[in-house]
Image (cartoon, rainbow, N blue to C red; front, side, top):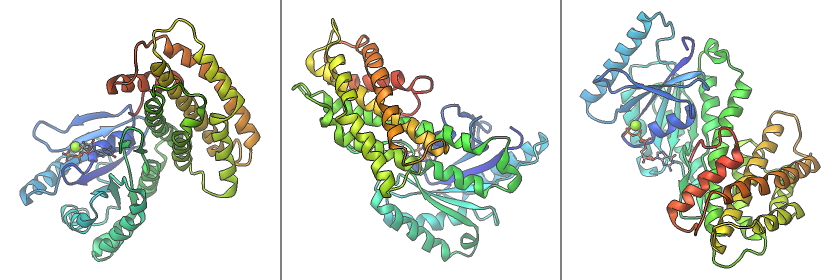
Length: 391
Ligand SMILES: Nc1nc2c(ncn2[C@@H]2O[C@H](COP(=O)(O)OP(=O)(O)OP(=O)(O)O)[C@@H](O)[C@H]2O)c(=O)[nH]1
Ligand SMILES: [Mg+2]
């Protein structure tokens, strides 16, 4: 890992630096504290061609800032002694909380001061916790304006990226899915000095891998919502009850894979939703699951597992369709292919994997810890290998 770039993540206490770093670097992240008293933590991952140095809180006193800067200098020097040429900071993630509009200007000022020693290093402003989708564009404009008033920032800020690093739960059935992570990775790679970009990694498959782990956290959150909706005491007569959750799931995945909102995309998304809600394949799979003999579940528990299975299977299938389109193996107007692909996955997986999970649970599935455990079981059953990633 000698030739990877260095990203410095900087921002006030609690803005979400650690959460962001873990999401971007993925499940194989390795962290080490840079010495006992050092405020720095260094994160590396084999799946991402840059390491991230979490500088801790820099909004505090002048002394604390100086301490951080000294620690960074020492870190650079130590790495240089190790024979590592790329010992300096290549990109700065300037983390600002996107949740509190009023504080944005002040945060830009504080960070400008704290990063003063890196005169020319490219900066990416990361608007963390950007839960309100409708405020994102306005917040970007606000940061843009604040940076324009600072001589250094107006030259060095390369991108302003609103992100949600992990799913934000609004209530039991509504959530804000992760967003902005692939954009942040791409902006970081773009800002890295040329030689660093390659890093021996194929960027296309690399970002596909990262996208998949974000996709899985969207699927997990949707599955948990499906379990909640499914665990009603009345038997579900059809899959229509899951329409809002599946719609949100499919839309979040579409955004993640850059599937736009044009009429061709719309037709594809409608086709996918139909397979999950009114298709013969979905109905047959649901009846088959309801008829699984000898399980230790009451009606509401059974419905919860079935509903969760439908959402998990739809999510996995949809993710794979979007991956093929992303890779250029299929186009947005291949709706017949997408329909066939999803139906056959549902026919094959929904019953087999749903039955497998039914065998592992008993009683009711209405308590919140039971729902969480069940969502975990379902997402790993339907996701196969790396499915347990994300929450
Ligand atoms: N749901 C959700 N919670 C987040 C997100 N980002 C941060 N949080 C929460 O915000 C809190 C602070 O996040 P951290 O990542 O620890 O923040 P930090 O910047 O590393 O904080 P310090 O290390 O104390 O400076 C934690 O409770 C996180 O779970 C996000 O994208 N989604
Ligand atoms: Mg932290």
